[in-house]
Image 1: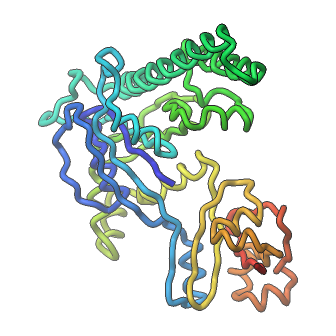
Image 2: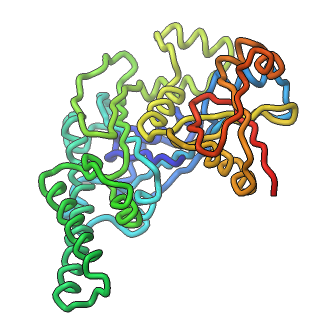
Length: 358
C-alpha cells in the first residue's frame, strides 16, 4: 500500500511525514509549489504480530508495510496556471490513496500563505484543483469518443457508446463539484477508467494538523471513501523520536493514548478495504495485506504465485482462537483448525497455512 501525503504549502506535511515514519526530514521551509517527493517504507504496528512472535520465537518477524510519499508541489491556482506538471501528476496518480494534511495551527514565524488559518477553505481549495484536473481529462476523452463515433472509427460501436455514457456520468459528477469516489461504479466500469489516474477517485484520509494544546475542530467531510482524523503533528513528530520509558512519560504528560502512526494506518486500512492475515512458524512470523473479501487462493497468491497455481487447501485458524489456546496443536485438538478451499473468504487476523502441489 502506498499513500501520498498531500497538502497546501505550510500545512505541515513533512512534520506529519516524520511523525508517521519516525523520520527527521527538514521542516519549516515551504516548497513554494516546487515538485519534490520524500519516500519511506514503515512497518504497520500490530499487537497480534507481537503476540504471535512471542509464541513462536521465530528467526524473523515481518510486519505488514506501508509506503508513504510526502509529495510537495501542490498549490492554489494550479488549474488556472497551466495545471500540474507531468512528474507531479504521475506521483499523485500512482499512489493508492491520500493523506491530506490541513493546517489548523497558528504560527507567527510561519504565517499561512493566505493570511489566515482556515482548514475548511484549504480542503475545498485542493479538492477543487483535483476536480479541475479530472474534468479536463474527462472532457478530452469525451471529445475524442464523440469524434470517433461520428466518423465510424470504432469496430465495436456498442462498447464505444457505453464508454461515452460512462464518461458523461463522470463529467456530470465533476461538474457538480463532486469527487468521482462518490459514484457507485461496477467492476467493469472501474476497470475501464483505472489507467486514467483520476485524482478524485482515490480514498482520502484528511488529517487536521493541530497545535500542541489545541482541541479538535469540527470539520464536515461526508464524501464516500473519506475520513477525518486529528493529529498534533509537531508533538507526534517529537514522540516518534522517543522510545521506552521516555515515550510513556511523554505520552502520559500530553494525554496521548495512541501514536499517530498506528491510528493513521488503521484508518487507512479501513478506508481502502484492506486487512491482514498471518503466516507463522519457527523461521518467520509474517503479516500479509489483502483486500477484504479476498479468497484463500488470492491470499495464497499474495504469499507466492506458485502457491496460488498449485493450491490444494488452506489450513486456517482465527487469531483469537490461536492466541487463547496458545498453540497450533491445541487449536487442532479443540477443533479450531479448519480446512478451507479456494473460495473461502479470508477474515482479518486469520492464520493461514497453504497446502499446494505443482
